[in-house]
Length: 493
Image 1: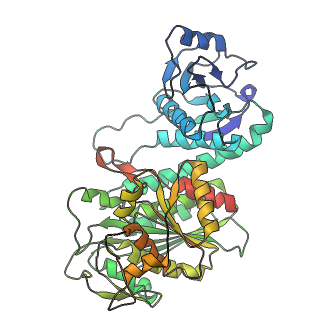
Image 2 (image 1 turned 45 degrees about the vertical axis):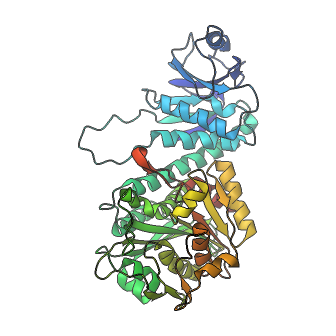
Image 3 (image 1 turned 120 degrees about the vertical axis):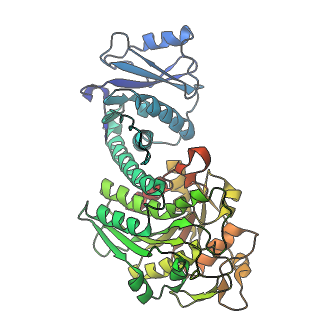
């Protein structure tokens, strides 16, 4: 799929023009002087009551006496300042309709509309991101005949002012790259756990690395992981027949010697809870417990596609958490790579046990910052639902930069507190710390546990247990927070 920015006069051909209308009948953007588009004919549809202009309403029609084969009219709601949230909803509706037509080339005039707190860059970026999301297909294993893929191949993000052209072009490229990264991430997370194993994740990283000279992958197995003394990580893998993997995927787009941003991803490809077995209801969704790993690998895929001028490294700890006669038991004490000892009171709190060793390993990469991403706690879902990722950090500037990136991309996060009071809940009579701190503030005590391994580092933790995937009948990966992380990394480039 190709996304590009264009002035109306520069569009060579199009199969569909996407145009907005407010609920008072006003066409947006102002199409005066745009050859081939007659706003009066479109306004007449509002006067006759055929189109009300309600937010997200769509009407696909053959245009009267214009070059395009189709016009898609999209409702913008009340004629006031259009918010970023409403604009994204309008784009999503438009993308879903157009993707079901036989149109190959589309001119989206919505990207030329004024939207509160956005620039030409972000309007074009949203257009590319949301069209990419609309075209995404889950990699199902059904034996029935596959539906015909969309014909869409080229989308113009229209601007009316030539001064916006360069920024819009940059935004279209960034949005297309995010689409690549989100699709890569969702493909991994949506696969069943008997396909997407730790070995599969390692192979996927190596395959991605072969796509660019700026990428380099290293995949370590159980012997190398044991040599690194990652006792906490290995304790989680003891009950599984699947060998664990430590995956390091480097993107070297910045200057030689530039300290990398390190993204650490939790890659539990299936989580039964171990000896602390989960309830069977919705346990099938625990294939999504590697969404953190999928996110950081997808972020690297996006940055490589965007040819970003920055160094970023993904560190993925991948394994299964299974019960067996060899599995770690509640009450066992394990030694982490840092040398700190941990009393495992609940084997279903395994994500922090693998992430702590990954954070310690990441120190040898001499990072500028470390951001770990994990479907870590059900407590975060209770606190924030699916709307926001939970954010914890030991550095205010880093936290604010991530929050700002979330607001700009509508891939939002919410910062929760992190203080020594919560760390006190992790005290153990038998080891340096316990791996759980009781029922109260479960998402915070999990972050407080990880913070013990990030001393002296600029570190942030994103808990995506609520935002990383959708449950129930519509169960699937959301691809979040790839957009947030890409935006943050580009802002640091």
